[in-house]
Image 1 (cartoon, rainbow, N blue to C red):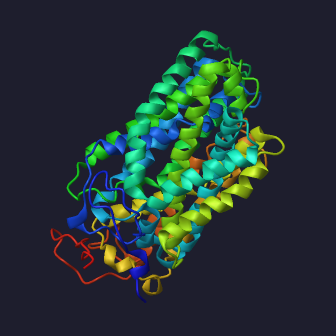
Image 2 (cartoon, rainbow, N blue to C red; image 1 turned 90 degrees about the horizontal axis):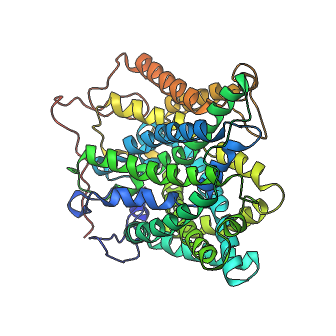
Length: 485
């Protein structure tokens, strides 16, 4: 089966504003480019959004109630734990030339269809979560109906997602300066009106449970990026510093998230409602309020463009034979309806429902990928996964993902479902992410050990457990693919 549909025109250098028709196919080594600092800005900018701000406000909600000091601690720990996943997986992009879900084909084979579709649906959900704030900001700024503001946001993000990798990197680089400056203004305002000494309202076991839940809510904001990680490093040269990518990714995703969530925590007592209007009221309207609304508008476009781009790669990895830009447009369109639904009823409860449920599958999925990568010592052949029809079933990885997710269920705490372990001895705490990660990775390791009879694969092996012809341990399996004529 031809894989040409996954290839196409690619950007060739920093600032090359071409329409990227290239999809999930690996980027040829001789066409790689990009300086290291771009890894920081591409992860810093998209987290300066109201979604992070309102995660921070949840620390003082009745079902959490940890107060300011413990709230900050939970935010920092949870964000760093989630950021580690992004940092580790992001180092794989230069080594494979592949995006994160396409890399899932190594371990999952054909069963990558499940995480691929889940990631595609997750990007639509994240689009909707963020777009509701952007549309409200435009409504306040331009005095247009909500649906008109929503349409403006989706058109702008759709255009960025359509043009692809390089245009988004360039946009995120410059917007990191613009949004950073605007959020400094917000910080100055919150410093004067916020409550930086809020006391905890929960006690004993409930306080411990609330702390764990807040830590998980903060982790969820960045863990979801784990399924995008190498999408935004796959054009980088294979010899790019792994340590540099790791620490810059961790710093980018963590600093912005921690910053905006602490602002939300401090402002929780003075934000009248969990909307862009609430932020406008916090800033006192006028020029400062207008600046905040522009920041929300830009931030929404920034983060949702990444959702649209990664969603298109994920659906291709799942087996869809559709050109990447067209999939990005479909993601944008579907987000319109979901955003309108989120805009009705209780936004706070719907926000938590979507936030957690679109993320629970990511840790066991990532754990399977990490174990597979470790077993093969990072030596993988990108050419062997391009033809979906020739992939093995990948049943081992699928079983591990499902078992990991199933093991996490008792430890979940959402407005739709509270597991017995969470409601019982965790006092409302949620450790489903960590349980899913550990169990998913362990199950996959054990299954592969039984199937292959070894803790490691001597060379990169297909998802079925059958080995390729042996090579000397020191000879890496090539990842280069030929350039287009």
